[in-house]
Image 1 (cartoon, helix red, strand yellow):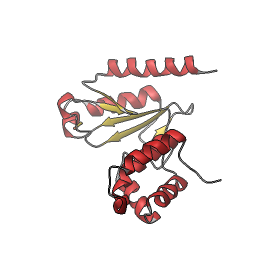
Image 2 (cartoon, helix red, strand yellow):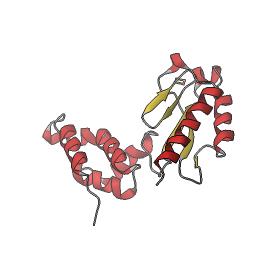
Image 3 (cartoon, helix red, strand yellow):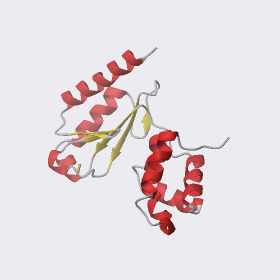
Image 4 (cartoon, protein in one colour):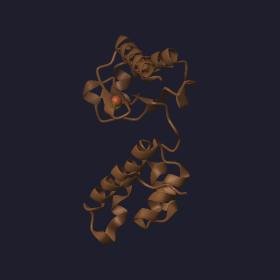
Length: 167
Ligand code: FES
């Protein structure tokens, strides 16, 4: 059986559609892709095809859009998706050091996921929070004015949460 949105997902999809004229469903493409990513963690070829069908858009167009936006994930990621901004303002305030620190702490490099599936690490372009550089985004949250010590605290906290959630 093919993919379909959960009940809650379907409600969110209908709410998205209502923001656009009925004959311009294509305008809802990006919010719908974000919703699909929320539903399934990443945009698999099946998920993109599903979105194309729901919006009457060519699958190739959905794929092109998903490929263009780095925040749209084409591959599965860990429970915590750590994205360190390494653009200019963050770079000037130590983001390279921070990225190396994350690599050492997690034992992975850019684009990799830890063996336990807990963390995926990426460096990314400006996340529009330059005034609080250096910063990173983890899932939907921003962590700003970071230091290596603060990163350690955060990672340890997430590891602890994962341990306490384990059956
Ligand atoms: S340069 Fe890092 S948020 Fe803009």
